[in-house]
Image (cartoon, rainbow, N blue to C red):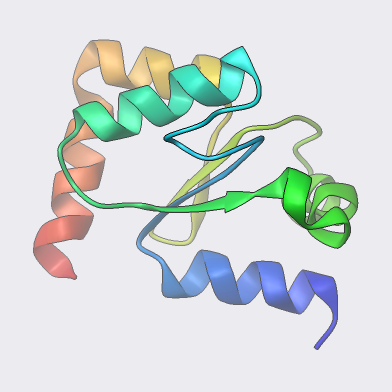
Length: 106
């Protein structure tokens, strides 16, 4: 399986997933930390991929959804965005609704 297929499988098999630098418990950059904190604040489980531990994903994820930066948050198989968009959605209460809808349907 090539790396884009692996990424696609991760995105499609996890209702909520963040590709980030580090882990939610030990983030390796401020943007990843803030996006993970927003997801954690929603109170529902989510998957994470530490892109620093998988160089193939680190190098190829930007072309998967044509999004050049990390972190990348996917909900229900769709790219939501990076840190700024995730935080904006959280502040508006929309991230919680998206996460809760997926959690109910899971």
